[in-house]
Amino acid sequence: MTGLGTLRALAVTHGALFWTEASPGRVSSIPSSGGARTDHATSPAPHALAVEGDTLCWTDSVAAEIVALDLTSGVTSVLATNQPSAYALALAGGFAYWTTYEVGEVLRIPRSGGPLEHIASSQVGAFGLAVGDHHVYWVNQDGGAILRSPLDGDALPEPIATECPAPRAIAVDESHVYWIDNVGIMRHDTLAGGPLVPLTEPPVSPHSFVLGGAYLYSTDEDGTIRRIPTAGGEPLSLAVDQALPSAIALDATHVYWHNAGDGTLMRVAR
Image (cartoon, rainbow, N blue to C red; front, side):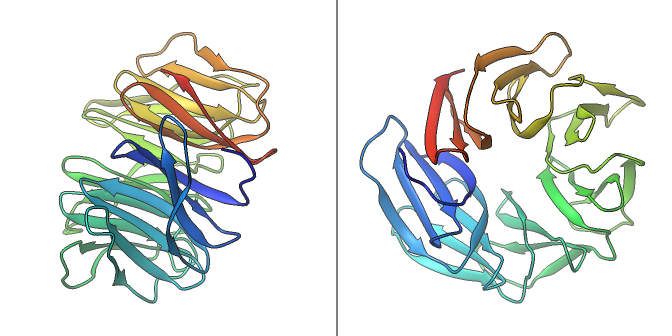
């Protein structure tokens, strides 16, 4: 795929690669093996994107909405309104979770409908978000902190790490939390605690990443797509000389990414 505008996020499901495109505002897909484009919805400025089961959700930073698309029926519905600067989104356990960067909140709502639930407030630049089995994790980008709270928000937020230089993307597995900041990709054991472990070293400077099994897959500012062992070890370059790779997604066999420099969608075997 070529000629894309301002792509914000990618997701792979149902044999298709979906993306949000801020300009023009639309949510689209192509078959994951390549093919014709399908536009599923128009939206003023769609941003974050997440999928679980037959539901695809996105945030819109201008309409200030959380929107759901039923992939079976093709019907869209608005889950929540008045949600400005919702730049991160996750779906898990029948809920949609998101952060609002400027307001500084972490929220969730049942995808089947129901009241909006506030998990945390007064967060400093709440940005990246990930959901584990028992907690929701997020980064306070402006405050330089990684925090978590029980899924229902029934406790004060617990700091995982502080004094992080501009953290942004975050991912979790059953025992660790991973994030990107200006130093690179960091790992912390959420069960045993202990020191932070750097999984990359400068000059590697990841833009975004996705967790898949025992590896993290990242796009890097130097134009490289890397596979990084979560246990630590030498990263493997899967593709090089890409044109400003940005958003990234994963399925069982391939890594997909967007090159912001030339508007292309690419893939490579995992």
